[in-house]
Length: 438
Image 1 (cartoon, rainbow, N blue to C red):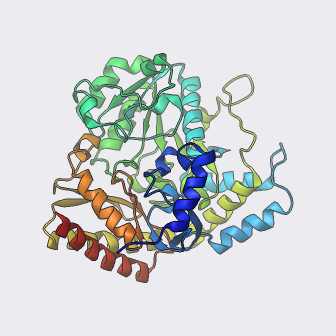
Image 2: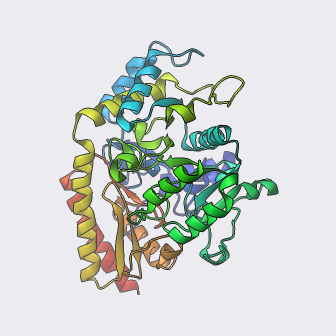
């Protein structure tokens, strides 16, 4: 089957005249033929410029937790902005949102921002200001935003250039990063207790922070092994290192209190964005009183003209209120589990080796192996080409995962029984189509 993409392609060619590669984020470029122009979204669906409809499992890379254009959120924003959008003073909405975030996450203090990149950048600065140290540990395949310190050994890194597990290479993922930045970041394999412990013991006096996505949000949702997050917490406590949970993807998605609640491990700082505002630009840093206490004039700098703006704050106020008062996450878990189980059954019957990874609100697939991956290197052993063919067959039929298997499937509250059933029907057809081609 072939979609009509006439208007979509025409608009994309126009975009290329004014925007590099026709997109405002490199991750949105899928090539000249497959990059879409989307005109609207509602509930669990999006439509391209040719009115092709898709059940959306990308959900704008994860922010949509309730559904596209979710009326209670849109109405709250529309009502709030009638009285202005930005004041250079604190507004009551900011206070309400900070209070909600603190209550839901258990953090003592909260500062608002706009993007995940912004808050992970500030979290590192806060950790350095608190400890007086400069280096930090992150984990291979994890993505913490677009600032220079974290663009090393992300999920875009070819496994063949990362060096040995025992002595990983920091792979720089962009031109334009000063060479000296490399010194400040240490990359380690996720879930590798031995490497972590020996590295911390050797370098603790230099380490301001360990920054970790509690699950690999850019490597199909790989989960922490039992005791992994607890080990990180133990080492941070032992050596005076700040533990930063990057909850930009897990926050308000896998539990109302995020990964800290779900996994039962407390961080010193945590960063939030995405699901916090159901698609509106809003982010936050939450932390313990003592650590957040270093922020202030003449101490640790934190600021932003648009931090706490009324549009984002109103969206977060509405979204978090709905999450607190309705069984949103529980429903997503139930529907997501149905989808994961159905996908697993279809692939098993088709005799395609696979493993379904992650949690129902954020999960992924690895094809070509039936071994559960425990880190990014394991994930890279899968059959990416097969996954891409399957994903494109789904998209052609109106179901929209990401074409790159490293990016998880996301579910929202608007994915109902009907959408799950339709997705599984289409998934079965796509698998048959892909098998015929091999």
